[in-house]
Image (cartoon, rainbow, N blue to C red; front, side):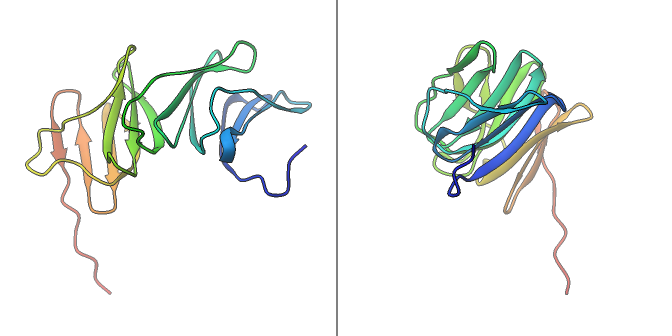
Length: 166
C-alpha cells in the first residue's frame, strides 16, 4: 500500500475507524477501521496538517497555499489562496479557519467562508514566522520562532517570552 519513499506528516480523524493521513506529493489516505485507501485530491503539494471540524468536514493544509475541504465519501475541493504561503497548521476559532504560514508570505491567515487572506494583527511589529496556530479556551494562539501572540476575537496581544538561562 505505501511506497517506501512516501513521507507522511499528519494524522487526525473523528474516530479510530475514520482516520485521515497526509503528506508529500498530495498524499491523502483514509483508514476506515479495516483497510487503508489512497484518496484522490486536487493537489500534488506537500500536505502538513489535518483539522476535523466534524465527521463530514475535514480540512487539510500544506505548501503552495493549499487548503482542502471535504471527506473520504464526497471527495475534497481546493479553497483558492493567492501568494502561495506554506500553511503548516490550521485550527478553528470563532467560526473561522485560521492557518499559520512558515514561508513568504509568513504569518497568520484566515478563511472566512469565502476567501483566504492574511491577518493584520495591528501589533507594532506584525507577526512573522508563525509555525503554529491553535485555539485554546476561547483564544487563538500563534507561535513562531520569536513570537507568541494571543487573539481573543477582538485584539491581538504579544506575549513576552522569558529569556533562556543555561
